[in-house]
Length: 84
Image (cartoon, rainbow, N blue to C red; front, side, top):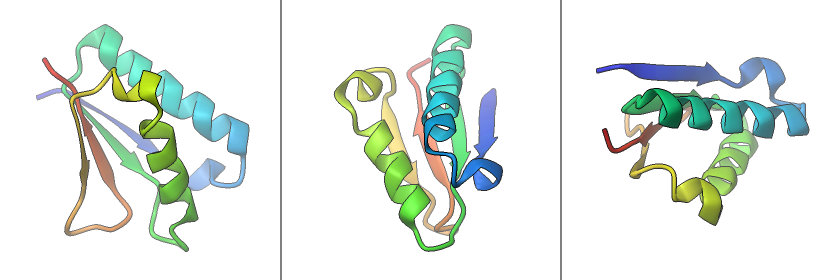
């Protein structure tokens, strides 16, 4: 199964860049029919993860993917599943 991965550690404090990168990877997954995107906001205070979840819950973004999964073993990781 093909998957894309994005680690947000390096841009955690650059608000606009975070949304640009999330938009880019979601669009790339849709265009290339990738089944899974792994997003790593990291553990930290949880603020970046909350921001990522708010981004993913937007109506126009939510329409692009099938299911969102929070990793039960790693608090700092999210999986976005797409219909193949």
